[in-house]
Length: 254
Length: 245
Image 1: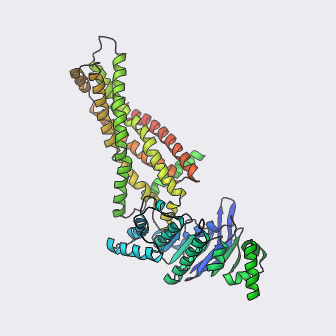
Image 2: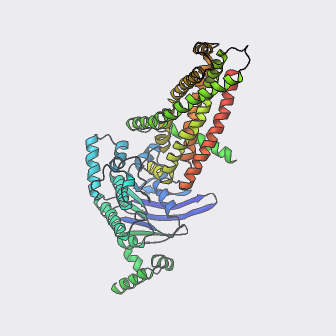
Image 3: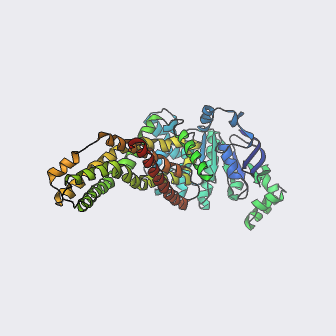
């Protein structure tokens, strides 16, 4: 579990995050949503330890990141997996080498053991016959799967995803969403997804954190989102006719 | 103020480069790769340029020595001094600022744009050490490149001088050995060593801290080339003043 307490982040005189208190739960897909400029990416980078909060703390299973020494911070980071928006795969490495990278860096496993684990996670994300290809030789959806495979290869406790289905067709986007949800439950990890894809929100949003202008504006699940009377959230989530109709149907059914 | 900020940031980066080390087995592979990318792949252009510039220096010297009282062996002496003292260490380094420097800036800059450096940091890897340290170590072989440049420059000078009919072979070899001061070689290699560090670190700085997208990668490469050249020229002056005055 990740516990965020009174998180503030400023760049110069501009305050991006204005005192966020929330929790992200183990075994659940936790979503951060909000309009562009709401502070989602800054929030995610604070969770990853890439940005130091101006004020407040982030606790990982009870340990505040800022209270850890450098070695402990490094050990904590090794328990984190991250799926970047663009995949962030290393261009000069093959798919196999990309996925093996965290194992090579942080474990003392033999090459055969590493290869077995790489094959296991590539199978898990349904990637076949791509081991010796380079990232530029596979599709965007496959790159996202490789990024997920790399993120989970070292058995992380926390998985962070920055807009994992951006730039993908709707079918592939849902496959990626479902894959992340399955992995979250299978590995019993705390997954935090930064997204503004409403399909993801309504498909896998088990714990949703809605940011507005750097403030925490709402939290709840995908079921709660149908019933909410928070006007700004309704305007944001149901901005299209299709989603408005979906909401109407859902409300009639509830 | 921006220059002071950049200089400070450059030294902070250097501190980070020599901070927490990457796993030795991984580092070894990275160093070999950088030796191939930065050193081995530069040899062709260095050999080509050095050979022809050596020839041109000889021809121009020969054409300007019209006085019959001046011995022809001075052509070889002048070519040797030009090549060892300035052409190979300094001129080749400025060419390398374009070739090696832009390679370093664009490769690190692209990794920054594609969030690959963030990916390394999230994994708990010291990205500055992982990316820049192997380049610095690889560039320690740069004096060998300059030694090859000196050799090829003198070969070029010999070919142009002797085969071009400007000086007899024996006179050229005499001139080559006349008044040889071994400290000049020491001076040239001290310069080369300092230049190697400049060539590895300034382009790395411009790539590592770049912001923006693909267009900015190109701009960062150009900026890196300009600043690397400026620092090389200033360092050349200071080292010459310190070592030869």
